[in-house]
Image (cartoon, rainbow, N blue to C red; front, top):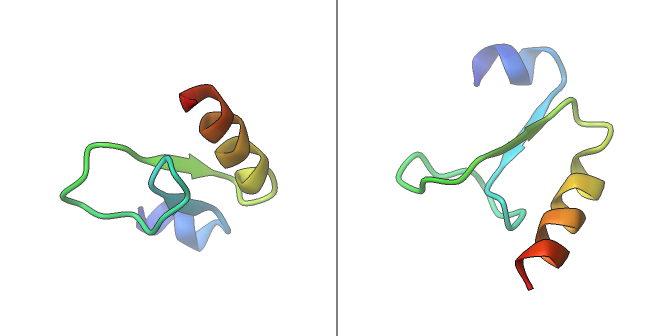
Length: 46
């Protein structure tokens, strides 16, 4: 997580909420496409 954030990446839960170590889901990206990735996952979950 530290390396990801130091490199400019973003981590959240799959639904876009803040990452929680006690939850099993994680969405990590380079930061540039994070919003688009979260949107695709939200649509796929419906």
